[in-house]
Length: 139
Image 1 (cartoon, rainbow, N blue to C red):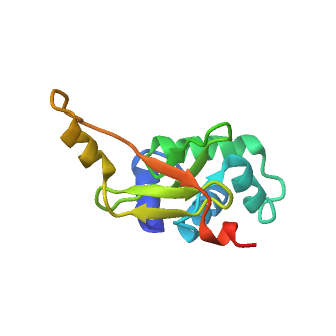
Image 2: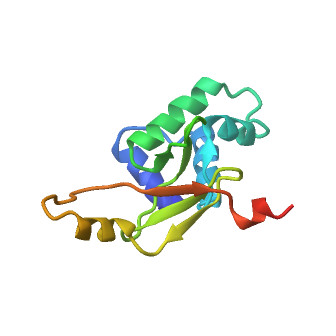
């Protein structure tokens, strides 16, 4: 998804494309393989908008999630993290819990699971693998 697509989606849904929303959206667009907590989004946008409130960040992140522009990642015992929603074919991600970088997994392990379930049809699923990337492992 690019800026123009997002702007069009906001307009169609009746939302304005404000400078603060643009800064938040730009963060996700410029870092498509990273995820950010709402707190990290705040830290990144604060230098550009020193008076921005955490509530504005939370509302905007929630709006972008509701509109399908970004997607939520759930880390065990950590704050939710968000990344730009992928618009490509079916795939999954390996996500670094330290830096938030994600890597696309080209194969779907759920297909193997379906083969093992004789009397059950998987209709939908979401799978992410969490760990530490090579960059974060090597000091």
